[in-house]
Image (cartoon, rainbow, N blue to C red; front, side, top):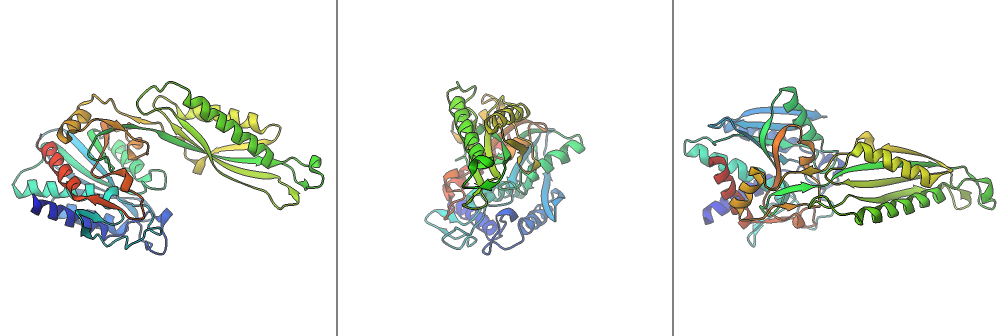
Length: 384
């Protein structure tokens, strides 16, 4: 196992060496290539392994990679690994050194989620070295824009499948879950608000209409809605939806009654909630709070809300991974690409090595024992 551990750790380190910071979070330390280099690496590596490879350009040269490894049965499974990482400007050491020490692999993407990509390809190579194929056909999918950009890469893979009339039996979304199957998490929506007031001299506020005052009423209304949501009985283990005002801006000068205020409201969507209905309900709540001032309510970035992800914890995929990993099904507080796949997969799970607590940190790492554990799980799953 020691040699296997070292090999897996080195494979993860090799991927950490390839910067792939999401362009929306790029800075001086990250470079400007985004996912381009790692997309090219994945396409070359999987093609050399004999996979049927598709490079799907999603936007501005940013490409998903779909590598299909034929199996010995009609069952098709997908492992979706997002290729982008979060930014590195706040990291306290070399973000891409991939050093191996103290039983860990360090560097940006080591846990979120290059470890999954490295291990899955390594296990497939092991099968090839034995002259075998996996039992299911395995699609290893590298997607862009998970960390920022509206899960654009996952939406691209979903659309690609639908255009070809293809459906996946079981789909794993790679995220650090300590090798426990995550069967649910909240969806989300964002509302961008603009309150319209009327400017006046601050010495005569009665001649104006204060947009910040209306914004304050909106904040109070949103806070009251959050209290109402938390008092409800949760329908699932994912819990209730949540809502909060996360940004606010307004005012022209200290001696002018503000004629405009802008707010961002974030709403986490629980299983069973319809984002379209929520938008209508929240628009009515916000307009009532802002009155008599007018307020524009729009979906953030023109993107509609996304329903929650929820898979029955007793489904075969969840139970299989729980048994193989000696773990219990869980729910997560974060979101993932799983939100984009209900239309194209019969079963979906969020699953991978390492802890989410190490993700996005100033020092990111993954424990090598987690690499060994997930490798054993994939070995068993691909042979089952």
